[in-house]
Image 1 (tube, rainbow, N blue to C red):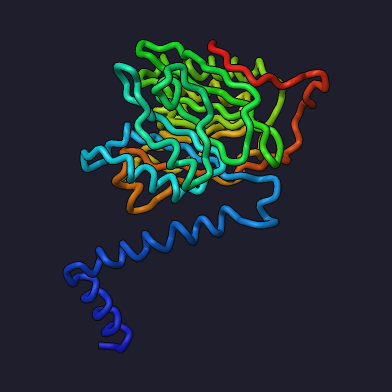
Image 2: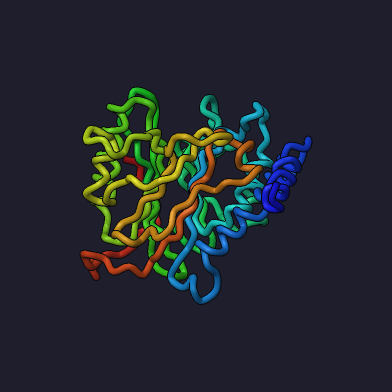
Length: 301
Protein backbone atom coordinates (compact mmCIF):
# COMPACT_ATOMS: atom_id res chain seq x y z
CA UNK A 1 0.00 0.00 0.00
CA UNK A 2 1.37 3.40 -0.98
CA UNK A 3 1.97 6.15 1.57
CA UNK A 4 -0.81 8.23 0.01
CA UNK A 5 -3.37 5.46 0.45
CA UNK A 6 -2.32 4.94 4.06
CA UNK A 7 -2.85 8.63 4.76
CA UNK A 8 -6.28 8.60 3.11
CA UNK A 9 -7.34 5.58 5.15
CA UNK A 10 -6.20 7.35 8.31
CA UNK A 11 -8.26 10.45 7.42
CA UNK A 12 -11.41 8.44 6.65
CA UNK A 13 -10.98 6.38 9.82
CA UNK A 14 -10.73 9.56 11.91
CA UNK A 15 -13.96 10.85 10.37
CA UNK A 16 -15.75 7.69 11.50
CA UNK A 17 -14.82 8.25 15.13
CA UNK A 18 -17.85 9.13 17.32
CA UNK A 19 -18.41 12.86 17.56
CA UNK A 20 -15.61 13.76 15.11
CA UNK A 21 -17.93 14.65 12.23
CA UNK A 22 -20.14 16.68 14.53
CA UNK A 23 -17.15 18.66 15.82
CA UNK A 24 -15.91 19.30 12.26
CA UNK A 25 -19.40 20.48 11.23
CA UNK A 26 -19.56 22.81 14.22
CA UNK A 27 -16.15 24.24 13.33
CA UNK A 28 -17.23 24.87 9.72
CA UNK A 29 -20.49 26.45 10.94
CA UNK A 30 -18.50 28.88 13.05
CA UNK A 31 -16.01 29.80 10.32
CA UNK A 32 -17.67 29.62 6.89
CA UNK A 33 -20.62 32.03 7.38
CA UNK A 34 -18.28 34.71 8.75
CA UNK A 35 -15.76 34.16 5.94
CA UNK A 36 -18.48 34.33 3.30
CA UNK A 37 -19.89 37.52 4.82
CA UNK A 38 -16.50 39.20 4.83
CA UNK A 39 -15.93 38.28 1.17
CA UNK A 40 -19.41 39.10 -0.22
CA UNK A 41 -20.40 42.01 2.05
CA UNK A 42 -17.40 44.36 2.27
CA UNK A 43 -16.88 47.06 4.87
CA UNK A 44 -15.19 50.45 4.79
CA UNK A 45 -14.72 52.33 1.53
CA UNK A 46 -15.76 49.30 -0.53
CA UNK A 47 -19.21 49.60 1.11
CA UNK A 48 -19.76 53.21 0.02
CA UNK A 49 -23.26 53.70 -1.38
CA UNK A 50 -24.22 50.18 -0.38
CA UNK A 51 -26.12 48.54 2.45
CA UNK A 52 -27.07 45.07 3.60
CA UNK A 53 -30.73 44.06 3.42
CA UNK A 54 -32.09 40.89 4.96
CA UNK A 55 -35.40 39.03 4.99
CA UNK A 56 -36.36 36.42 7.57
CA UNK A 57 -39.54 34.43 8.20
CA UNK A 58 -39.22 33.87 11.95
CA UNK A 59 -42.15 31.40 12.15
CA UNK A 60 -43.58 33.22 15.17
CA UNK A 61 -40.33 32.42 17.05
CA UNK A 62 -41.03 28.67 17.01
CA UNK A 63 -37.96 26.70 16.01
CA UNK A 64 -37.56 23.39 14.24
CA UNK A 65 -37.39 21.76 17.67
CA UNK A 66 -40.91 23.02 18.43
CA UNK A 67 -39.73 25.49 21.08
CA UNK A 68 -40.91 29.09 21.29
CA UNK A 69 -37.70 31.05 21.77
CA UNK A 70 -37.51 34.75 20.75
CA UNK A 71 -33.97 34.84 22.17
CA UNK A 72 -32.73 32.64 19.32
CA UNK A 73 -34.38 34.88 16.73
CA UNK A 74 -32.65 37.90 18.26
CA UNK A 75 -29.32 36.07 18.07
CA UNK A 76 -29.85 35.31 14.36
CA UNK A 77 -30.77 38.96 13.73
CA UNK A 78 -27.46 39.93 15.31
CA UNK A 79 -25.69 37.48 12.97
CA UNK A 80 -27.32 39.08 9.91
CA UNK A 81 -25.85 42.53 10.70
CA UNK A 82 -28.37 44.13 8.33
CA UNK A 83 -29.01 47.82 7.68
CA UNK A 84 -32.59 47.09 6.55
CA UNK A 85 -34.47 44.03 7.81
CA UNK A 86 -37.85 42.57 6.86
CA UNK A 87 -39.45 39.97 9.13
CA UNK A 88 -42.41 37.76 8.36
CA UNK A 89 -44.66 36.19 11.02
CA UNK A 90 -43.44 38.71 13.58
CA UNK A 91 -46.87 38.92 15.28
CA UNK A 92 -49.32 36.42 16.68
CA UNK A 93 -51.92 35.54 14.08
CA UNK A 94 -55.04 35.84 16.25
CA UNK A 95 -56.45 38.09 18.95
CA UNK A 96 -54.57 41.36 19.43
CA UNK A 97 -51.85 40.10 17.05
CA UNK A 98 -49.25 40.93 19.65
CA UNK A 99 -45.64 41.33 18.53
CA UNK A 100 -43.32 38.54 19.63
CA UNK A 101 -39.96 40.28 19.95
CA UNK A 102 -38.28 42.69 22.35
CA UNK A 103 -38.15 45.72 20.05
CA UNK A 104 -36.23 47.92 22.48
CA UNK A 105 -33.56 45.26 22.90
CA UNK A 106 -33.24 44.76 19.12
CA UNK A 107 -32.60 48.47 18.70
CA UNK A 108 -30.19 48.56 21.64
CA UNK A 109 -28.12 45.60 20.45
CA UNK A 110 -28.26 46.02 16.66
CA UNK A 111 -29.20 49.64 16.00
CA UNK A 112 -32.27 48.50 14.04
CA UNK A 113 -35.38 50.57 14.76
CA UNK A 114 -38.89 49.35 13.99
CA UNK A 115 -40.63 51.25 11.20
CA UNK A 116 -44.16 52.10 12.44
CA UNK A 117 -46.13 50.06 9.91
CA UNK A 118 -48.45 48.42 12.47
CA UNK A 119 -52.12 49.31 12.72
CA UNK A 120 -52.62 47.72 16.16
CA UNK A 121 -50.68 49.11 19.16
CA UNK A 122 -49.47 45.68 20.29
CA UNK A 123 -48.25 44.57 16.83
CA UNK A 124 -44.82 44.87 15.27
CA UNK A 125 -46.10 44.75 11.70
CA UNK A 126 -49.01 44.47 9.29
CA UNK A 127 -50.24 40.92 8.70
CA UNK A 128 -47.01 39.87 10.43
CA UNK A 129 -44.74 41.86 8.08
CA UNK A 130 -42.34 44.13 9.98
CA UNK A 131 -39.54 46.39 8.73
CA UNK A 132 -36.52 47.58 10.70
CA UNK A 133 -33.96 50.15 9.61
CA UNK A 134 -30.61 51.34 10.94
CA UNK A 135 -29.68 55.02 10.49
CA UNK A 136 -32.63 55.84 8.28
CA UNK A 137 -35.81 57.92 8.39
CA UNK A 138 -39.14 56.75 6.94
CA UNK A 139 -40.56 59.37 4.56
CA UNK A 140 -43.71 57.48 3.62
CA UNK A 141 -45.37 54.26 4.83
CA UNK A 142 -48.11 52.23 3.17
CA UNK A 143 -50.01 49.17 4.34
CA UNK A 144 -51.18 47.01 1.44
CA UNK A 145 -54.01 44.50 1.66
CA UNK A 146 -53.28 41.75 -0.84
CA UNK A 147 -56.01 39.76 -2.63
CA UNK A 148 -56.21 36.28 -1.15
CA UNK A 149 -58.53 33.58 0.15
CA UNK A 150 -56.75 34.06 3.50
CA UNK A 151 -55.80 37.41 5.08
CA UNK A 152 -52.49 38.59 3.58
CA UNK A 153 -50.76 41.94 3.40
CA UNK A 154 -47.55 43.75 2.55
CA UNK A 155 -45.87 46.91 3.80
CA UNK A 156 -44.04 49.57 1.84
CA UNK A 157 -41.82 52.33 3.16
CA UNK A 158 -39.69 54.94 1.45
CA UNK A 159 -36.53 55.57 3.47
CA UNK A 160 -34.11 58.47 3.59
CA UNK A 161 -30.75 56.77 4.26
CA UNK A 162 -27.19 58.09 4.56
CA UNK A 163 -26.43 56.62 1.11
CA UNK A 164 -29.61 57.84 -0.57
CA UNK A 165 -33.28 57.00 -0.81
CA UNK A 166 -34.67 53.47 -0.93
CA UNK A 167 -38.15 52.02 -1.25
CA UNK A 168 -38.57 48.80 0.72
CA UNK A 169 -41.50 46.45 0.12
CA UNK A 170 -41.90 43.51 2.50
CA UNK A 171 -44.42 40.77 1.75
CA UNK A 172 -45.52 37.28 2.71
CA UNK A 173 -47.40 35.78 -0.22
CA UNK A 174 -50.20 33.23 0.07
CA UNK A 175 -50.23 29.46 -0.14
CA UNK A 176 -52.47 29.26 -3.24
CA UNK A 177 -50.90 29.82 -6.65
CA UNK A 178 -53.81 31.86 -7.98
CA UNK A 179 -53.60 34.11 -4.93
CA UNK A 180 -49.86 34.60 -5.40
CA UNK A 181 -50.47 35.56 -9.03
CA UNK A 182 -52.93 38.26 -7.97
CA UNK A 183 -50.68 39.42 -5.13
CA UNK A 184 -47.59 39.91 -7.28
CA UNK A 185 -49.66 41.93 -9.77
CA UNK A 186 -50.96 44.09 -6.90
CA UNK A 187 -47.43 44.68 -5.59
CA UNK A 188 -46.16 45.82 -9.00
CA UNK A 189 -49.14 48.16 -9.34
CA UNK A 190 -48.48 49.68 -5.89
CA UNK A 191 -44.79 50.22 -6.68
CA UNK A 192 -45.60 51.81 -10.03
CA UNK A 193 -47.70 54.47 -8.27
CA UNK A 194 -44.66 55.83 -6.43
CA UNK A 195 -41.90 58.15 -7.58
CA UNK A 196 -38.95 56.40 -9.24
CA UNK A 197 -36.33 55.43 -6.66
CA UNK A 198 -34.20 52.34 -5.94
CA UNK A 199 -36.59 49.63 -4.77
CA UNK A 200 -36.19 46.25 -3.12
CA UNK A 201 -38.97 43.68 -2.73
CA UNK A 202 -38.24 41.00 -0.17
CA UNK A 203 -40.00 38.36 1.85
CA UNK A 204 -41.40 34.85 1.81
CA UNK A 205 -42.84 34.37 -1.68
CA UNK A 206 -44.05 30.79 -1.07
CA UNK A 207 -43.10 30.04 -4.69
CA UNK A 208 -40.42 27.57 -5.76
CA UNK A 209 -41.04 27.38 -9.54
CA UNK A 210 -40.05 30.82 -10.88
CA UNK A 211 -38.95 29.62 -14.32
CA UNK A 212 -42.34 28.29 -15.43
CA UNK A 213 -44.40 30.43 -17.84
CA UNK A 214 -47.38 30.23 -15.50
CA UNK A 215 -45.36 31.10 -12.38
CA UNK A 216 -46.91 33.79 -10.16
CA UNK A 217 -43.48 35.46 -10.12
CA UNK A 218 -43.79 36.18 -13.84
CA UNK A 219 -45.77 39.33 -12.95
CA UNK A 220 -42.65 40.69 -11.24
CA UNK A 221 -40.34 40.21 -14.23
CA UNK A 222 -41.15 43.46 -16.13
CA UNK A 223 -40.00 45.41 -13.06
CA UNK A 224 -37.40 43.20 -11.37
CA UNK A 225 -36.30 40.84 -14.15
CA UNK A 226 -36.37 37.03 -14.00
CA UNK A 227 -36.43 35.73 -10.41
CA UNK A 228 -34.50 32.58 -11.26
CA UNK A 229 -31.27 32.64 -9.31
CA UNK A 230 -31.99 32.01 -5.64
CA UNK A 231 -30.65 29.54 -3.15
CA UNK A 232 -32.90 27.16 -1.18
CA UNK A 233 -34.02 28.56 2.17
CA UNK A 234 -36.75 26.12 3.27
CA UNK A 235 -36.91 23.94 5.29
CA UNK A 236 -34.06 25.33 7.34
CA UNK A 237 -32.54 22.01 8.47
CA UNK A 238 -32.21 20.69 4.92
CA UNK A 239 -33.13 23.48 2.46
CA UNK A 240 -34.76 22.38 -0.79
CA UNK A 241 -37.06 25.23 -1.86
CA UNK A 242 -36.08 28.84 -2.65
CA UNK A 243 -39.10 30.49 -1.03
CA UNK A 244 -37.36 33.58 0.37
CA UNK A 245 -36.06 36.23 -2.02
CA UNK A 246 -34.75 39.77 -2.33
CA UNK A 247 -35.33 41.49 -5.69
CA UNK A 248 -34.18 44.93 -6.78
CA UNK A 249 -35.02 47.71 -9.24
CA UNK A 250 -33.34 49.00 -11.32
CA UNK A 251 -31.18 46.14 -12.54
CA UNK A 252 -27.95 46.02 -10.53
CA UNK A 253 -29.47 47.41 -7.35
CA UNK A 254 -29.22 43.97 -5.72
CA UNK A 255 -25.62 42.93 -6.30
CA UNK A 256 -25.31 39.79 -4.16
CA UNK A 257 -27.90 37.52 -2.58
CA UNK A 258 -27.06 34.66 -0.22
CA UNK A 259 -28.93 32.43 2.18
CA UNK A 260 -27.60 32.78 5.72
CA UNK A 261 -26.52 29.34 6.93
CA UNK A 262 -25.56 28.99 10.56
CA UNK A 263 -26.12 26.37 13.21
CA UNK A 264 -28.43 28.72 15.10
CA UNK A 265 -30.43 29.75 12.00
CA UNK A 266 -31.12 26.10 11.18
CA UNK A 267 -32.95 25.60 14.48
CA UNK A 268 -34.41 29.06 15.29
CA UNK A 269 -37.06 28.97 12.50
CA UNK A 270 -38.21 26.69 9.70
CA UNK A 271 -36.90 29.27 7.18
CA UNK A 272 -33.32 30.44 6.72
CA UNK A 273 -32.75 34.20 6.36
CA UNK A 274 -31.69 35.77 3.06
CA UNK A 275 -29.14 38.60 2.83
CA UNK A 276 -28.42 40.95 -0.07
CA UNK A 277 -25.90 43.68 -0.85
CA UNK A 278 -27.87 46.66 -2.17
CA UNK A 279 -26.29 49.38 -4.30
CA UNK A 280 -28.02 52.75 -3.98
CA UNK A 281 -25.89 54.42 -6.64
CA UNK A 282 -27.26 52.58 -9.70
CA UNK A 283 -28.65 55.18 -12.16
CA UNK A 284 -32.42 55.22 -12.51
CA UNK A 285 -33.94 54.66 -15.96
CA UNK A 286 -36.37 57.52 -15.22
CA UNK A 287 -35.33 60.59 -13.26
CA UNK A 288 -37.52 61.44 -10.22
CA UNK A 289 -39.76 64.49 -10.55
CA UNK A 290 -38.10 67.55 -8.94
CA UNK A 291 -41.52 68.71 -7.71
CA UNK A 292 -42.18 65.56 -5.68
CA UNK A 293 -42.09 66.28 -1.94
CA UNK A 294 -41.80 63.41 0.55
CA UNK A 295 -44.63 62.99 3.05
CA UNK A 296 -44.17 61.25 6.39
CA UNK A 297 -47.64 59.71 6.41
CA UNK A 298 -49.08 56.24 6.73
CA UNK A 299 -51.54 54.98 4.11
CA UNK A 300 -53.60 51.83 3.91
CA UNK A 301 -54.49 50.47 0.51
